Every structure is written in structure tokens, then in C-alpha cells.
Amino acid sequence: MNIMVCVKQVPDNAVVPKLDPSTGKVMTQGVETMVSPFDLNAIEAGLTLVSEHGGEVSVITAGDDSCKTALRIGLSMGAEKAYLVCDSALEDSDTWATSYTLAKAIASIGSFDVILCGKQAIDDDAGQVAAGIAEQLGISQVTYVNEIREVTASSIIVKRVCPAGEEVVTASLPVVLSCEKSLNEPRYPTLKRTRMANRVEIPTLDCAAIGADAGKVGKNSPSAVKRLYTPAPRQSGEILKGEADEIARTGVQKLVDQKVI
Image 1 (cartoon, one colour):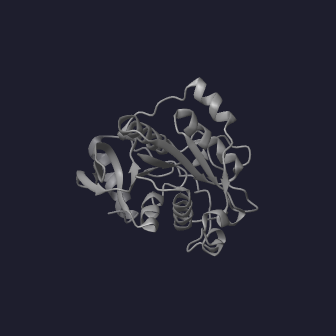
Image 2 (image 1 turned 135 degrees about the vertical axis):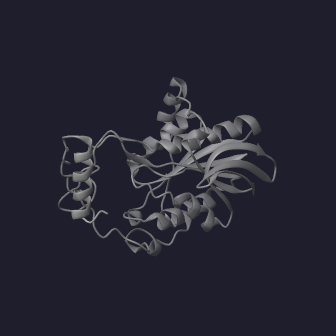
Image 3 (image 1 turned 30 degrees about the vertical axis):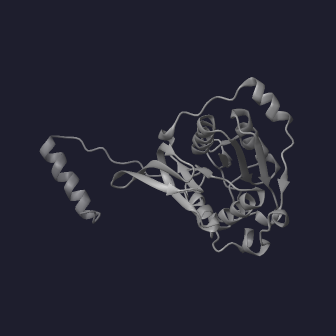
């Protein structure tokens, strides 16, 4: 099987994001980063499929040169190849433009039986890129996958989480799958592969190389963030004291006064 895994480098979730007052954007300089956790589940799913059916796993991301760190983590876990899509025209791309760019890049690299993504990135929680890639490529998609049950030469059977519970879905290959955390337990990188990953020369692809129209990405994306701001701190609540009946009456009256009920 030929498998591509899309990953994203995000700020460490232990760090409270701060806004640059001059640009209104999240500050990234000097901030610790990590691979979005759901993407690690996607890498593990790809490696498991290859161990069972043969083939190789590649990883890809879009961003600046620093994002090679995320790709090297994928290589150190067991991926064979890595690709960085880097172009100044991609700055400020929305989820549609990101999906478009990754789809163009994947199509330019080769044919893949399965394309894996995390169910969402933890920095924006949009969860739209996987479905967007499938739409751009015109192939099958299954989101929120928490079990891969069976793979044949032309189809895959998976279980996915849905509002009503769970569904078992059969999809034709090629397919895009977005992965839940419950799908697996990502392996730790080995020392040998980490050393190898640090020496690998990762190819960089720009918009021209992948055939992407720079007029559709970055500041030309269909949508744009109008404003980012830090929410005002919540005011401390009031603790009611007294007998139970008295607290109940007082509480109800306060809710009525504030038109909550």
C-alpha cells in the first residue's frame, strides 16, 4: 500500500497562546511546538497498515522551514519519505486553501491508496482539511475513524464515531481517513530512526512545483480571520449561604432577575 499522512506542527498545548498587539496574530516566535496529537494517530495507522499489507508511508505538511521538525518526527516513527510544501504565497491560507494545496501536492507526488489525517488540528480545531483534500481529489472519505477493520485491493472497512454512536463504513480506494485518538496508541520514535531522520534531506515544494494557483491561497483564500482577541476574564461567581430552602429561593430569584429563566 502507498500511504500519505498529512501532519501539522502546532504550538505546544501546554503553552497559553498570546497575541501580537501589532499584528493581531498568535505569536509563534520562540514558542515550543509539537505535532498535532491526532496526526500521530494517523502516522501510527499508516505504519500499521504497511506492516500488515506492505508498502510505504510518506508524511507531508505545509508551512515554513521550521515545520520540518514535524516531518522528522514522522520519519523517526517509521515513515520512509517526507515532503514540505513551502511558499510565501501560502501565508494566511484558510482551511479550503490548505486542503487545495495539500491535494495538489499529493497528486504531484504520486498515487496513494490511503491518505490519513488527524481528525482535527488542536490549534484551530476546524477538522475540515481531511474532507477538503478528498473533495479536491475527487475520492472517497471517511471522517472520525476509530477502527480499521479490513482492507482489500479495492476497498476498506472502518468504524467511525458519529452523533448517533458509531457506524461501520465500507469505502472504495483511494480514500481519505481522518483519525480519532481512540484508533491506536502511537509508537515512540526509535533512537536509530531519529538519527536517520535528522540526516534526511527533506524536499521542499512550492506552488509552481505542485501546480497550485497562488491566486487561490494565502491572502486570496475564500475566507479570512477578521479579528483575533483574548476573551475577557470571567467574573467570579457568588456563593449563596443559608438554609437549603432559602438558598433555592434566592437562586431562582437571581436567575429570574438576570432573565436566565
